[in-house]
Length: 428
Ligand SMILES: *Cc1c(COP(=O)(O)O)cnc(C)c1O
Image: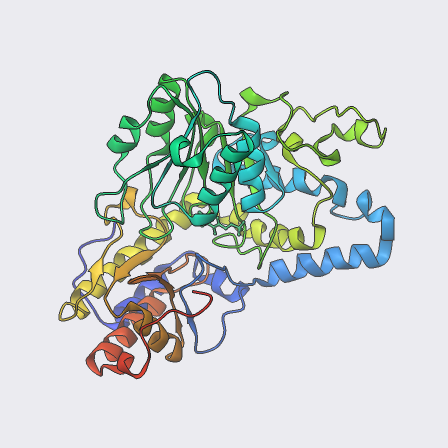
C-alpha cells in the first residue's frame, strides 16, 4: 500500500517513476510518442520481443517448410504445450494443466462441452448478469445443444448496483439443480475481483463443477488455480498479455480431470505419439493437451513467446504490486482533481477487490472518451456511461497517470467534450 497521497505534483509522479523497478520495461514496447495508452486491458501493446518472436516463427516457415513442425527453436508441433508450461505460473497451475490454444469463445465452448454433464435434476448452469456477452451466448448455445431451454436452465446472478456482484448471492444461487458454474475472475466493466478460492470451495461442497474466465486477470493479478482446486479456466492473451490482435488464447484443466475425453474432439486432442497413426479412434492426451482441437495457429501464437518472456522475468507478484500502485495513484488524483464534476469511481477501491483498471462513470462518458482520444489519451468506453482506464505495469508510468488526469480535468474545465456527440462508435 502506498501512503496517503499528499503531493499532487508532476514532480512527485516523476519521483515515483524513478523509484519504479519496472520502469525500464517501457522501452521494450512500442509506445507511440505523445500518446498515453490506457487501453491495455482491451488490447495490449506490441513489444519488441513479441515482434522478434513473430519474425522468428515466420522465418522458421521460410527456412524449414514442413519440417518446422519438429525443427527450429520453437517446433510448432509442441508450441501449445511449451507455451502452456511457460504460462502456468501466471495462473498458479502445473505445466501440463495449461494449454495455449483456441480462442476465448472457442475454449468456452470446448470446456462447457467437456464439463457440463447434466444429470437427473442437476441440469442448470450458473453465471451472472454482468458477464461478457460472448460467455453468455456460448452458455446458451451449449444448453440448447443438450436440449435445454436457456430461459429456464441458465441462472444469471443479479447485481444490486449494476457494477458489482456479491459473493453471498452467488453462493446462495448454488442450488441442488446446478450442474456447472462459469464466472469471471475480474469483471470486465467494474474490474471487481471475485474470491475464486471461496467460490470454488463453496461450489465443491455442493458437488458443482466450477470454471472461471480469466480474460481480465491473466497477466494482471496472480492466481492459484491448482491450489484452489478450480476445475477449469480459459482466457485471451491479447489483453494484459500483449499477444496481439486475435492472438491464440489459453485454457487450464485441473489434473484431477485428466484422462477424460474432450467434449469437442479433433486430431490435436490426441496423445502426441498416436496422432500420426491416423486411427479413427481417438486416444486423447492425458494432460490439458486433450482440449486442443485442430492445427495450432502458429503465427497468431508466435508473439506470445516474446511477450511471455517478460512476465517470466518479472513475475506476476511484482506486476500486481505496481498495478495496484498505479490504480491507487489514479484514484487519488481523480478524487483530488475532479471532485467538482459528476464522476463516480465505480470499481472496488480495496486492493484485494480491485483488478487492473479503473472504472469511472459519468453521464457524458461517450463524448468524454472521444475528447480524451483527441487529446492522445486512449481510454475505452463501455456503454452506457463507463470509462475504463488501465494503467499497465509493464509500459505505463506514474507520469502517464498524472498527465491523463490533468488532461481529463482540462476537458471538463473547458467543456471540450461538448464538441462531440454522446454516442459510442461501432467498436468501443
Ligand atoms: C475479451 C473477452 C472475451 C473475448 O472473447 P474472444 O473469443 O477472444 O473474442 C471473452 N470474455 C471476456 C470476459 C472478455 O473480457
